Image (cartoon, rainbow, N blue to C red; front, side, top):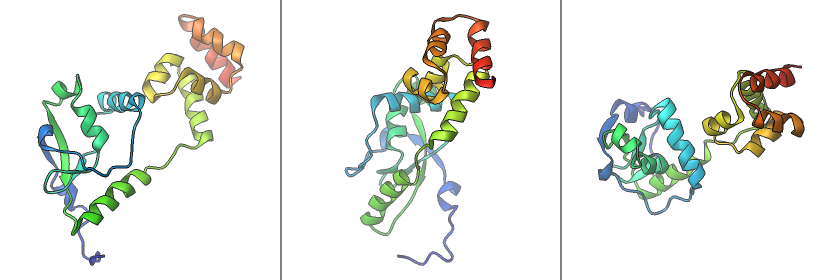
Length: 178
């Protein structure tokens, strides 16, 4: 391992660039696979929140981290909205093993969602008046997942799905707050 005592950890971000996405290429060792529904969720996230995380590349433009962001950036409407550009930072490791380790550690460091905080988020979104379908689209969950996290009884939940207008929201607020 190289000497990290005087290393500028902000160096990659200081050199943030916007480049043509077609210059970038995937690596041949990424162990992380994402389902199509999660790629759609990633696209939804970029459309709603903007492109918040740059793609990490080697000096030869091979991806270290951000393969899935790169993939969806080539899909419409993102490709047109982004002007076929993507934000990148270049990381020049001393060797290929550090590139591979970077890919794995970026993926593994992202963590997982804990049950109780996710339940609280779903309950809060319902209490704020979002429909089950709106929540499903915004956070990429199936109706069944939302049902389980909401802790609402099945009959009330089914009524929420079939009701229209303010009653759906009022009932959700009543059940969650009551």
